[in-house]
Structure formats: structure tokens, C-alpha cells
Length: 267
Length: 158
Length: 110
Image (cartoon, rainbow over all chains, first blue to last red; front, side):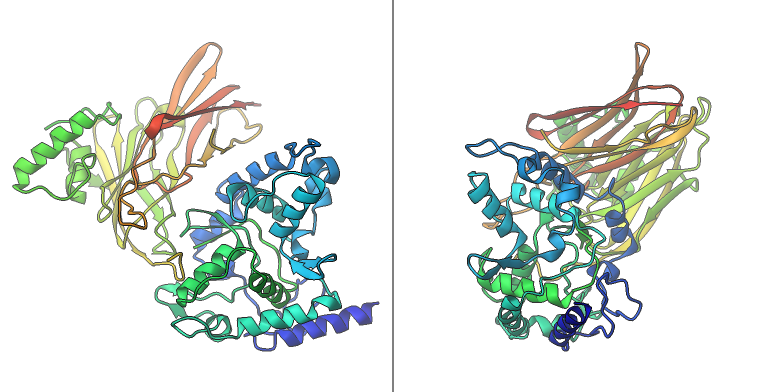
């Protein structure tokens, strides 16, 4: 079993061959001194880091508190809350966000955590699902995400996802937009260097949903990716588009082993 | 014209009066919101101090020198004061140099505070100077001025 | 009702100076920002924050602040208070468009 796991991780490592610092010795907990990958946290100023470090100062915790209320709120025709099936989130949701995007068995496709929550709402609560990037969706997503804080990003090793990861990797390396730049151009080749006054991070989705100071609000990874696409003057994909899910899946594989920081703060 | 510093309310009639006075002094109307009176950082400081000389020292202004994003800049102002009935800070204010409006925040403290310290997060439109000014119960004023560089985020909504 | 997050030390020792942290969800729309069509979005800010301490029938204003558009969205204010006795800390935020929010937290001094 351990050999199979090690082989699977080696496969994931080859996918990250283009990244600035591929890991040589990837263990399941991600706490590894030879791992040269850096979270966006490491590229921020100390005072912005201080906002993320302290739950009493982190504005994202306002959404997390809302998320906790939503977790316990009854909805749908059967008046069920998330808690009705899942009980207390710190126990049942521990490690869940760290595994997403994950394989959805019926469709055979990867889905994001937001989409998983929507499926629960539709199929199990029989309630109206929260639309992507709405305050309710972000609140519940950040509350669930918090339950994985400190754990390693652990993408699914299901072989059925391999093709989607490859597709996401191709998209990461594809030049797009009027500026004709790919994600890899900036985030693999120029990570740590400057874009104007801003330092370019390595683009690991370790902290989503996060409070972006630029947005003055909490937002999800897809909102950030849409900003990236606007940044290179490309038409952004719609929220929940399969292109995004594949890209997020690749990003999670590329960040495998790094610690979840949700809910983060970023400039 | 003198302002009663105890009236910490947003009296728009009072502000229009101040703007009219400013017009008289400068001879032209700056394109400013009706509720923002002093035009320069120095004018804002001297208005807060009611013309009293402002000394340096006693006020510590903690802020990052290089700011990731001007939307939320953490600051901590600490005033060296025993906060006793006999010797305490009564008011603390922060003013800026280049935002659309000079005032940032104005606070009132009492000896019940135990320590004269304020932490908050502020908006900075661009690289500029900031001044934190404290009013003591004996009518004296102390201030500290910092200068910071504000960088812009990359890859944003538009 | 805006979401708030107030942090007070749970059981401070008598006569220690504690830090009180108050965070509230609010856009603090400055009134200086144009929308997509170039039209100025109207100002919508919290203008005043107050904290009172009540104990044994007596209520004192221990901190107040006048906020301007330069205070960030989701305003965070931290200030100090010498905890001499147990009582109730009451917080009040008021602002544009009739915004008003009150919260209270027990202070237990040991």
C-alpha cells in the first residue's frame, strides 16, 4: 500500500516538473525541509501576514462566523441543516476541503467544493443551492475550509482524475489573452520577482476562500483566477466552468503537501 | 474659526461653514467633498490642535514602511502616558496627506483606558505622509509623522 | 444585522489593562469611488463607534471614535481598558443610512 502511495506521489511530482521547485521527498504530511515551494503568505509583508495569523483580526473570520450559522440553519422542504446529516463540522469536515477538487462518481468528472456543497443542497437538503461567489456560498465554504486548516493539501489519487489533471496542466501552460501569457510564464518562471510593485507568488491555492485586501471582501479561488485572466486581457471563464475545475485540480496536485491556510488574507 | 473638539458629530452645517471659511482664505474652491474641511495635512493638524503648538515625542506610530495594498493598512498608535486622572490622553487622531479627505479617525479616551493605544486598519490612496496627534488633558499636543510607500496589487477585477 | 467579532480576554486579573478588539462587517463605501459607468457610488460608512462599561448601576463611556472613509472596510478597532471589576461591555456602531448595531459582552474580572 505504501509503495502504491509513493508511486502515486511520484506521478504527481512529475506533473509539477515545470514548477520552480519540484519536491524530491514528498511525504503525506507535507512538513518537509527540502520542499522549496512557498505559499503566497511568504510573499506578503509582515503586517499583512499578521492579519492572517490572528483570528481576532482576520476579516475573513466574519464570513466564517456566518458560515457556522449557515451550517446550523435548517433549509429545504425537510428542514434539514448541514448539521442534521454531518453533525459538528470540526469533526465531520476535518480534511474535506484539503481533498478538493474531488471526483464526483455519477458524472465521472472532478468538482469543486462549492459544487459539492451545491449538490448536497439540491440532492440531500432539497433546498435552493447557493450561487457561486455569493456571500452565503463563501461563508459556508470558508467555514468548511477552516476545518482543514493546518492539514496538507491532499488531492485525490483516483486514476480517473489523471486525464483532467493533464488537461489542467496544459491549460496552466497555455498562453492566453492579448498579453499572450500563460500562468506558468509568471508563476513558474517569475515567482518571487516583481510585477509592477507587487511580488509574483507561486500560485498555490493554499488559503482559499480568502480575504483579498484588493477586493475588501472574502472571495474564492475562481474569482482570483478570473482576475488573473483579466490581468492578461483574456476573457475569463464563467464560475464553475469545467476549464476552471480542471485548472484547480492541477493547482491542487501542484500544491500537494502544502498546508491549508484557509481562511487566508492576501493583498 | 474655532471648533468645539467635544462635538465629535458630523454636523454638515458646521462643515459647510468651514468650507466657506476655507474659500475665503485660499481664494478658490478645491474640488473636495462637502464634508472634508482642511485642505492640507498641516491645516488638519493645526485645526485639531486649535492653533496650539504641537510637540514631537511621546507618540509612537507603528505602520509598515512598504504597504502591500492601500485598502487595509494596519496601524497602531501608542502614546507614552500614565493615563492617570492627573495626566492622560483625552483625544487621539490620525490625519493623512494625499487621500481625498484629510481625516482618518478621531478617538476620545479617558483615564479608564489604562493605556493610550489604538489599533485599526486604514485606507491609503497613494504613498504619502501620515500624522498621529494626541491631545493631553493639560491642553498640550504631541504628534508623530510617518511616510509610507503604497504599492498596487496586480491582476485585479478589471 | 452586520456580523461582528469582539475579542475580550476571558478572565483578566483585577486592575490589569486589557485590550478589547472589535471587528464588524461593513463595506465602508467611501463616496469617492466611481462605479463601472463612472458615476460616484454614494458614501455608506460607519461614522461612530462607542464602547461603554456598566457595573453596579453605573455606565461609563470608555472609548469612542469618529470614523471617516479612510477607515478600511470591515472596520477593526482595538483599544485598552483597565479592568477593575466585572461588568458588561456594550458596543455601538452607528452610521450612514440609519445604520446602527449594538453588541454586548460580559467582562469577568478575577
